[in-house]
Length: 385
Ligand code: P1T
Image (cartoon, rainbow, N blue to C red; front, side):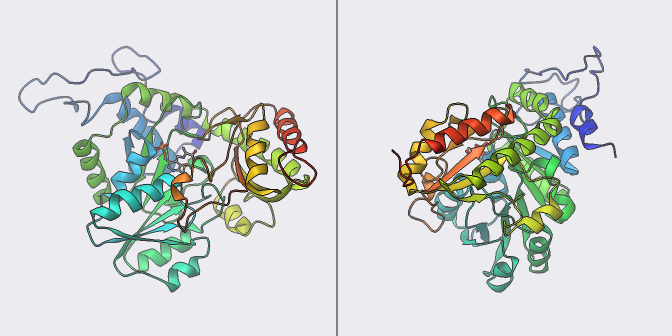
């Protein structure tokens, strides 16, 4: 197999056989001519299959080391397709700090349709081994988690789940296949919000599932066509274009995150920095073993609670106050009121003193200076002066 960077540039993207174009054409046709009834060149109708989407699926599957890739219109559409493989009465375990949208989808869409669910602290595999709800068919893993950056041991989780007849699906959005390949660690499928690092430029919403499980792939392919949450050809092109630079972008995201973390860890207004690259992070050893590097996402607790956290996110200039993550520009947000507001009042509720940063690829010194000056502006008591 060729190297990661080579696959990112070439997998699924041979020069066009008709024109020699080195970039896969954006195939906008909704339908494809048939030579005779049922005799065609692999494509019939664009919801069922599209050449640009096929190029994207081949490329992303190659990056995850998967035999199959299935692209969706958003990360949540991809998550939804995986959850639809469960039957009424089946149980899914989700992380206590799952992405708020995943929690909302499980608890408010799929649970009313008959699946059961529970939230567990998967950063300790013992929790899972000790409290295994009956009819658990799926263990949903995020690592690093959104927004607490906790780490789940994928191999240990897969061993426990497989021994009890459940599949393990890893949301690999924060790490990307450049930093972590869950299938190699025993996971059955990988889910992405390609809206984030894969696309990388805050200009496309997309989702993806990779698996080497033929039966699961067949079911997902069926669901992709039957439920119709497919990405447009233009969106597929944007993700394909973004992913070519994934490796170089991730290296810079990680390097810049390290600089931001070093400043935050030394700042008196910061109570705690959550970053798996820190030696005192509880998941550091596992992260070091299963990831190439620690990623571009950094969360921290601000002294002074919610008022200070909100004042801070409104005072940065380079870090834009916005939801989402994983693109070239740095973003900052308040998870309790923004991305994870749907978990308010539940066991998955987020600490209102928490701030989350998606560290971009701008000049590291500029990012550090921006965050430092916003932190310095909080009053000495840690409030929001
Ligand atoms: O937004 P969408 O492409 O549907 O992806 C949903 C999703 C799935 N998984 C993880 C880990 C995610 O972070 C997300 C989306 N997250 C945000 C928009 C956010 O700001 O956290």
